[in-house]
Image 1 (cartoon, protein in one colour):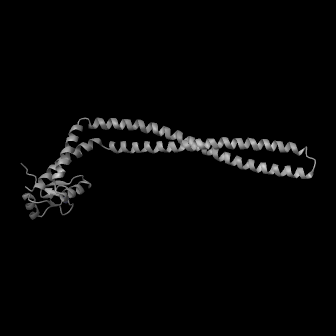
Image 2 (cartoon, helix red, strand yellow):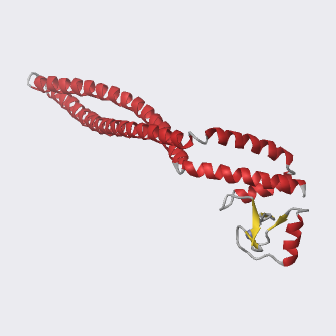
Image 3 (cartoon, helix red, strand yellow):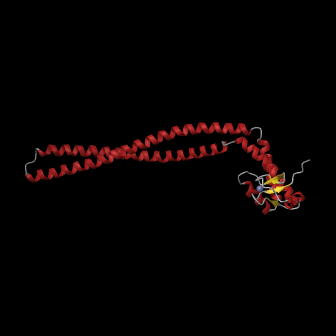
Length: 236
Ligand SMILES: [Zn+2]
């Protein structure tokens, strides 16, 4: 038998078993991965929002000071209106009052804007914290479930992976890459036996000459239709 073919058949057996073990995991690895990602994303969002919130609260305090200050000035100017003796002084005070009123309006608008930003940031932080708690507890559940599913097959899985990497080094690079390319496909296999003169993967019937060559096991033969590597499995 062709040495590469022999090694590829062994690799196929290992991968078949690895696939079986992976099926036990179901969608748990993807769930764990996506929950971990979500936690990182939410934490980073919270960090940014907390900084923004501190800045916003600082600005709110400053705007409040400015509002108090302008209000006090306005009060003072209005009192002074009764005390002035000349028209010139009166006009000057009116200008100050107009100026203060304008300032008051602008500052109030800024204050309102900051206040609404503060509310948005606070509620986003609060929501994120709730989602974070839920995701963290769901992550723990998934990890426990995953560990439970793999408990019995973990040692076997590790030993299969070890055997696999030893085998891979012995196989010609071009055959290995062909095998791996097929394995990444829909059915997760790189090599399959011929069954009733048909490809075991796509069920395409082989020409008799191809069957003879596959039976000889002297070289690597792939399915003309799906590209998978084919071998002959003795029925006995
Ligand atoms: Zn095929």
